Image 1 (cartoon, rainbow, N blue to C red):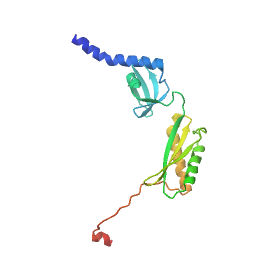
Image 2: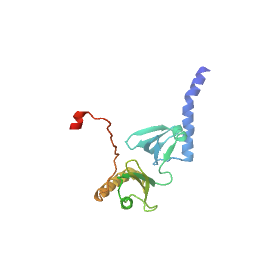
Image 3: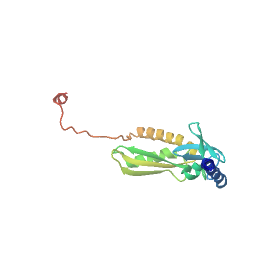
Image 4: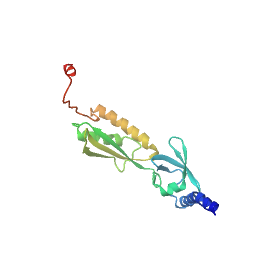
Length: 189
């Protein structure tokens, strides 16, 4: 009977993964070819089996994920209904910058990128007066989630280029240092 109990506990995970595999095959919350985010890693579903699912990461690694993990854990499927995805680019500029000019330059960067959807239109928000910067966000919809990182890089480059041309400074943290006492040898220098 001890052997039977041991075998039962050993098969529990296999049976759980098998049942979860059937759920995946019938409900289809993920399909082969979908782009998913599992545990903070982006991957493409390459095979769904009855016990485990194989995902291919952007690091060219194949990861075997037990089907129970796909059913019981949070999985973001970026392509279940659409290949579009929203991209948010935070931008901090130096105090004293022309707010309207910053907002228009950010909109122009987004409008001219071919990977960004025209509708809904790119949105620029002036979020806050930060500790060392005026904080903005550029929010855009990209047409294909596969182009997310490429589009983000292109936007960063274009924002940097346009801000340099317009002499708008991207803010860096600034700290004031107050000295209460200074050694005389340092003070004389």
